[in-house]
Image (cartoon, rainbow over all chains, first blue to last red; front, top):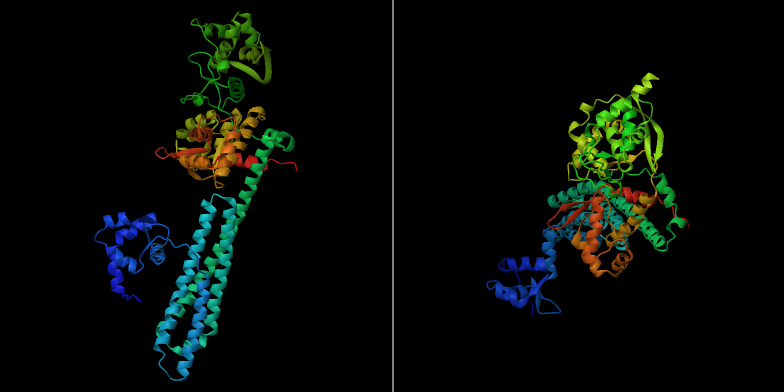
Length: 392
Length: 184
């Protein structure tokens, strides 16, 4: 039995079911019982009859028919499926219609219906070309940016590359067709057809640069993906060697490490006294003394930094008289560490006192940046009084 | 080069110094702690900043979208090696989760966890990463992300849904690993 349909009925029924359509579009399927219970005013049975809704083939749930789904997908601009083959089919159909038109024209029959059909097909070609261009662009970008599986990514990108080549061919075949049938279309002398042909030609010029850009973008995506793939392969190999304990034997990783300009590691605070915050004192002090132009104002940091527990020196409450020690140091010949040792500073406090002296009075000291004195397994910079040097 | 320190980004110098002391990166694509602001400020005074820090042994290095400070002395080998070797496991794990895991990639902790829950391959990889001891998959993922965060390679975008972004500095690890020669 043929079902009689008219557009007004379809629209009325669609309108009564619009909330159901939205729900099914979002969630794919819903139990028919729930739908019927929740949307009592909707003309569900009519929607089923007009194939707007369908029963799922596996269970008793409602789904959107593929036509309805595709219609809304296209209206929402979410249609990313390509249909390049349709362009060729349209041209074949057009050729056939032109023949029919020609025959009728020769027989002086009415050609109005043929002209309408030719127009209707011609008008679909530009949107088809544009839709496919957008779909390929969107698919390739999605594959490149979001596809987590490397093989699938390359497969999808290669498909997009092939599709854009096909689309270029199809666009060219449209141009060729219009060129071949140039006189024919002119003889029709139909304003609407002439206008749509002009639009098609204009569209073709615009598409040409878009094709070129997209083709080169997809090629870049593929190249980048291949590069990423090579990196993944390399990482897997390195991991394999690491697990086999042959990483150092079968790669140059240790040489590469030596050649690497290392990142500053988090500087460890060497707390020598509750008030002291000196960071990497030897390196910093040595350079600061030899380069007096540099300001040391910002050396203290306010952010908390972990310190090395081994380097921590416990400080007893009794503190040394640093100004007195400094005064005595300035008027004698020995270097700082020997002077402190001579002044019976306890071994466990030697480093703390040394740094404190250096921190407080560095402007009065001189230091050769490469000379160190080793005492108790620790290197101390060789520091003399500037006054002593001036005397010399 | 005579450097007038009062003209040298006075509002940022303390922050830059704090970053140096922590061994951190200054990323253009970071939104935390004014890093992108500092990055742009350094870009404008790059030569002066480099010259300022050079005498005290800190070399300003520039790579694609990030700065960091390096020693002017040779690497101390062992610790750097240990760190890089740890990253072979981590980079391999993350690339297996998603081969798009690289600079600029956004991810959620929960999505890595759910992939780990459902993939035998990832579970095998996680089992072999003995350095990251964990009671369950969630803790394992959290520890990896925490390490990346601590080392300055990722940043939390939203604490509500634990969403992160991979910072430009992640290139430091990728570049190093891609330059290691494998003898065939």
